[in-house]
Length: 235
Image 1 (cartoon, helix red, strand yellow):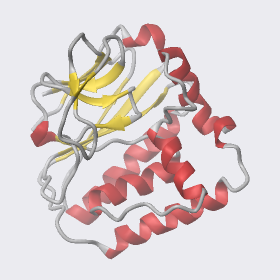
Image 2: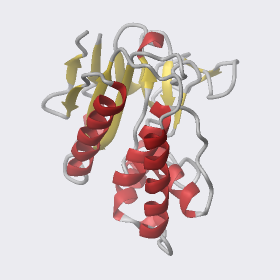
Image 3: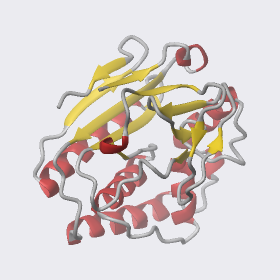
Image 4: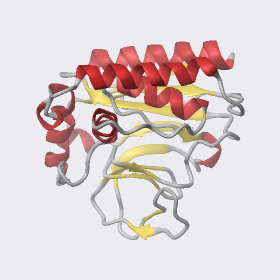
């Protein structure tokens, strides 16, 4: 299996980069107190850090809003996943306690203000790509069973069977969600090499360390950008 950023993507987003963590053989059943505490701490820290801040103008999020505009997405209507996450906690909302992996991803995403995904590798068919959608491709929204047709030319994550995310880092599909039964997981962390590259790399490093500590696995790390746009996700 390979992970690929399709070269035409760089014509619109020349500095896009993605840090990837792949962890296999996880046991995501049960709850770990330390992970729950990490999420609580990250939530409290984000509320303090961004209190009174206009998130729409914050440099950590502005880069994603500008990218959405270039891609033809209204960033006020379609928030990047990290802006939606931060907006929720800064307004006093609580994040749902889903499972250890999801809680860990949310904690690291909040800490470094970068969008992070988590996809069950067992649900992926063929290669996974960041590319523009094709006519007639389908996406099943999170929490739903009926697919919708995605317009051609929308930047998405996709495998050989279906669209995995809509509007790049806006929303993930139902089929790829990480449940307590997921064992092999693909974590992408999206950013920009001329902006928040260090935050992407720090988040990648910290996520890997937590996965090793709490799940006793040996994660593998990859980094993709314009001059290194694909990686083979070794078993």
